[in-house]
Image (cartoon, rainbow, N blue to C red):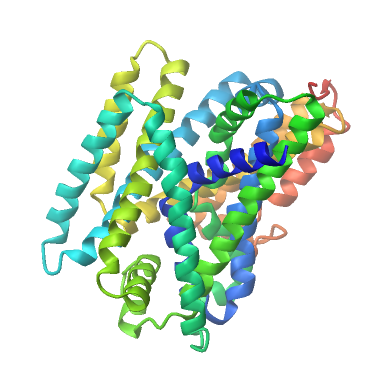
Length: 438
């Protein structure tokens, strides 16, 4: 059981580990300053805790989340939600972000005064062309590269973090930005959304089920114990890396001019810390490792997203989906990393609460029967509060902002939590109850 759990945990760690896992923790460390520990606690809770629980719950049901959502809410909602989710972890956010992180962390520092926009265009053109060619004929080599290189890269990052901690731990962190001063835990929790891991867990739970079934189990009890072991392995790996990278960003000396600019702080810390600790030639090695690690994620996401859309809407061929998603990823990647992060956050602030609510409903329903109208109401409340929050903050609708602020835990970026709990409680007493499937 230990061997099976460790192998599956290592595989999933390799699949999860990508662009966002690298750049957001050191950025949080830099911006949270003297509020680092509550901020990183919020980040780990949303970036690791919710993602792992989502993965475990999805893995416990071999039929997957699409079956759970269709049964508890509606088949139409299940399709709409999963389409939005796959587009988010695919061509709109995660796929272009892997390319831009590869460029900005690895390639851009090597280019000197070269035109950055032109260099990004040329790099992403080659990058996505190669990813598309692999996606057209996916093979085991992609999985093997991801499983071998990603853990190696994670170990190297851990070495960087340890050496940096020894070198820079005496450097005092800066004063936290206004957002972190107002609510360090809440801001950290929101930043954890950017990793996309909780959303990816919904899709990757299918991979976990397939992998575990290939290993074979003597009993359901052994299968369940192994799933929990997988969750512990992945959670520990990510928590250590996140806290370490965050600590590096918190203590690494960043010039005031860089802090005041729109430079991505996570990219800056990773690149400069690598050069400072290992020397200027280390940037070449960093460029190769980041690019290969992100590249396998890109190709894998093109494959998984295209397969989902082809199985859901089979009238369009897999090749057409792969072509379209590659082109969208290429186009969005050329907007630049900061632009991708900026327009992705509002969508994530809607999808994450809905995802968390689905997981909560599935967990509670495993122990007690819940009303289907009650579960539908709960999802509606989560969606309503999340959409209202995003619209209010985006378009500065003061009346709605004030209303959202009145909700419990709004200051901690969780205004949807109490409405969801109320919805679940109503599900205990409303009619048309469902019990969990064995």
